[in-house]
Length: 633
Image (cartoon, rainbow, N blue to C red):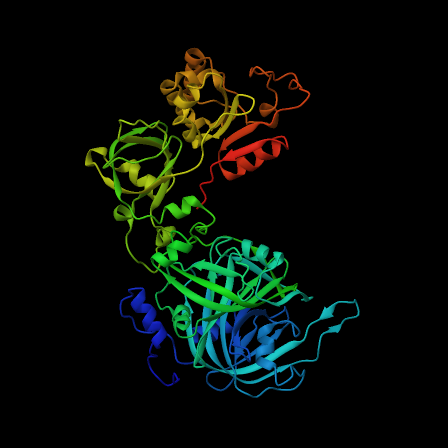
């Protein structure tokens, strides 16, 4: 058992095991043996306290409490050293931590103090200021006030929990992955929706799907405990498909982002593979509690389940409880953490994500770079050995050897780089040639890899490993003979590589609806210079012009009109633009479409950002088919 009087607390065997598995260098344990000044200050200034405890089956559970508005803080130091008091309005019926701390024999007896010491871990949390401090200790006495009562206006007042505990450990944590929220008190009105099932219901799945934060408690057997948060972009926790085995439960998995490398949570999971999770809904006050068996996934094991991850945790649920309006607070979302990476999809959710786990066996050498617009360039690469791919597919390139700077705890200058694997997928924008080992990608400068490409001299002939080629965005024949393609900006690239195949079909008609920002109008001109047959098929929409058209844009527009008979529309693409088309494919903006007795099912190919794609889909007829490439992985 760790002693409070130790000047430096040792790591336990599970933590040391994680250090070894993760190749972490030797590092002294910064945990303070007792109530640190940092924790003392945090107790009286933070509005939230996440709490973990073990139930009678030695399973960890987690909850989160707030002061409820009667006080700006939920806890405070008391007179004796290392002794603190906690007072909070709680859900006395369905909160599993309240039950774990106060249940004696047959259940909770309100008003009766429980003096049996019980392990308790906590995390003080100020989401607005991104501050958190962890603590662990044992309760000295705990009690719950009388059961919930009704006020004169009919509202229900939940009971107050009060406890006194001795703090044995405390440690401050960094602000990474904390998404800002402004917390305000609320009256809990707990309603039990689902209880004690190992499988997640629709409400629980929806909450996990939008959560950008949850709390997790773990234990090192019955020696000590740890409660901490995990944060990221909404949806960073993924739910695996249920396997129908009656003896199992739903399975969650989340990526372990780059942290402080103390591995206190994962170290506990090495000795005691159980975890209790709490997912709060800051908007509604709903809360999901669950406890389950864990598996720490490292290296290839993590990547096979959650591609682009080198460390992840999988939890198979033993029991879960969903409570509507069970929390005594609400939160208004603010600025997300700058350290958040993108959502990582399961290998079963995305073939694109799964392809990034394939070890590289081929390389691409940069041959040329050609700037088309201020932010869009075309790059030609040469394969080191033949590869099989088809027009319109993407190539996954691994730039980690060029850009990965190694571990850093914080990196304010480039926060997202801490979790970046520098694997990027770009659509091959050149047609496939059986006799040619060269391919092109046309891409916009918008991140670390594309910035690197924009400044590198092609004469250096850099070599980049290829993870794979892939993708299913194939433009096939349509039932009515018309190929309808909608592109947003750089979204034209999947079409470019497939144009020779499309124009080789004698009966195919191509209708291209292309919307670009004025800054990118040279991309249109470049595309038509290289593909002159595309001009008669094009309906062009230019955005971002404003009241005054820049001279360079005017010049390019004049060239498009003079050389290619393309008349750009200086506005956004609208719903009517996709509907007012005659049967022969010519435009008729003034009249409604020609009706037929049995309208044929139309197929639309869309390559754009998610927002534009959602808008476009809402405009189309109910019976239309939509084919799109999803680059979210």
